[in-house]
Length: 310
View (spheres, rainbow, N blue to C red):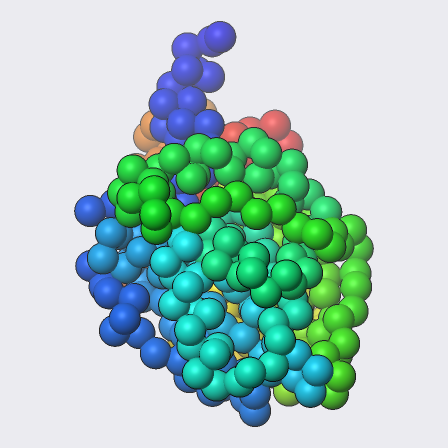
């Protein structure tokens, strides 16, 4: 292994550590908001995962249809998923038919075990199984170390895999699913609710909290265009306010990604080593995003690896 590869491995450890627990916010202090008729979302705090918040940091929720319930995100741990399960039971006695697993990061999938008893269809990208095979055990170990074995949850695999697109019928509304190319991760899944017109792009859209790049920077730009083509006016981002105007929110994300791309390309072309690029690229975005210091350096590392081979 070359010295440069060794340095890069040290910079990001081979796995995305996005949203893993660190020494917050209590899950019990959070509440659901009805962002559209029958659609309830909890805003996750702009914070790292902690024992206090049980990795409950993503925007999670559910949609109540005539024939049953679809869970938009399962939560970040067994404890977080159990909290969401209780919130659903308070509002409806309809069966939980579907649980979305929008990508591999733990704050979006480790609540899934809380719904096993409902025997739902667990829905994920066709590439999610492989991503969970590669990372799931590591993510679970870290969660267990911080939260305890009884709260961490377990790896749950999709029972419905979406390769291109699919539809889910809740009886009075249809959800259109799209499997995206490598972008935020290698296994991003989005959903358009035809009943409300709301787009659920999951972590393909961050608002206020800095995006985490764990797939392909160039691919993310391509998937932004696919999301725009869906024509939704409003969206429920993976992190940020529970409902936002889609166009300006995506413009903010694209601005950051553009700075990341253009300044990384300039660093590569000028022979700036990766360690120095991590300290200098996209600093003009620093005051616009929560957790900038936590994630920007890793984003630069990921972008540098991709763009140096253009």
